[in-house]
Image 1 (cartoon, rainbow, N blue to C red):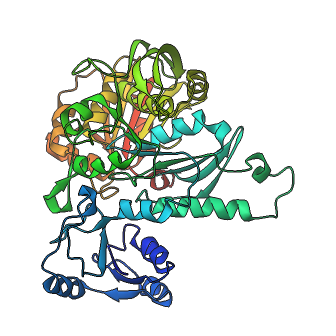
Image 2: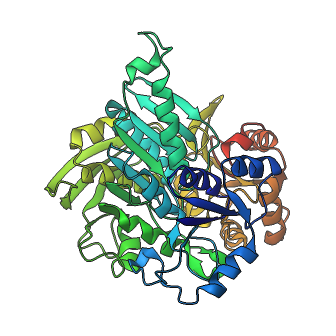
Image 3: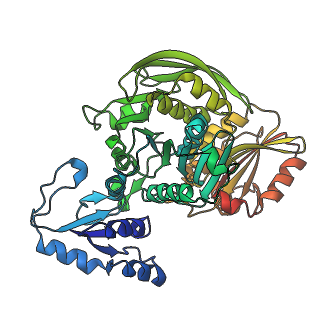
Length: 487
């Protein structure tokens, strides 16, 4: 079989390497974005992978005009005499749809290798937070976690990072699984070492951008807030995430399911939904009420109605949760973790215990003290206007609030709607002391047309908020944590 791997920027090199190890596979690789170094090209060629360009792709389709549909529609009507399997990411805008997406390729390569339960997480917002909460819920199962914070293995009272600064392209699941296998093959650990405290991986929790691989027992779509275009405007994030319905069972926020997915999901596919309440809420499986917000702990009641587990059991129950969730969007993320866990058949008492141990994400959503001042950090490379509005509404209720907002460009494919953000900030009253920072803050300040407070350095911004008498500071910064930690 001949295989063409398109796009070597977003995990394609991993896929090319893995396919090259299969018997009777001739692999071609197309660096469509011209980002691969000569060293990396040489490394692929050493494995017998042939580098090609657009002319190779075009000549193939000129010779095979009866090209059929892609396999995501379960239609293999392409020319049976064609020997070339085209594998490309869902966001790649090719003249012809690929036979297989990168997500599907990962599912194909790992389907017989991963023998533990898998939860896969996608969505526009909340993926990393959901993965972190699931890590706490499943610590006694020795989870392997892939998220935008890295690859980790964890156990009760211990965890270790196997890889930092990894992308959440689907091929990174291959990397995460291999790292775990290599970790446990190392025989140099003594009886008191970490390796013996986590004797084996018992569950995989994988964050994935733009869809699912089909490996998941439970696939999670956290939300589709501020849907954005991909593939040069020819598709959207919400359409790409339809791939998650290849999972055995799907969990999805109710609004996204009703507005986008209810008419597209497979007829025999069960979807458990969750919601804060309101909207099309009649048949929601998991929802909350009696919320008592707090900076350190928020307490709320969870109501579960007709939720179906992967074993086909029906759950109707209610229970109280206490966890770190100072604002509405944090509760929404918590609901995705709760619904995923219950869908796996996990007892509510394990969910409650795990969430009690969750205290936020360092470098994402977390609390810190600066003297007597409380700082609520919202650091996220994909922060959007919806999240900003929810966080600001939260800080309004606290004593002498201040907002420091800014960040960088180019940290994700999805940029923030500056016009909408500027309009929102301009409408804030004087009850919130506003300071803008970073490249994003500079641009927003110009749009707002007034002489708003600005510092290009976060520390200077914090100093000014402190001098202004702020007691609670909300720091919203669009950045990767590794970049912010160097400030």
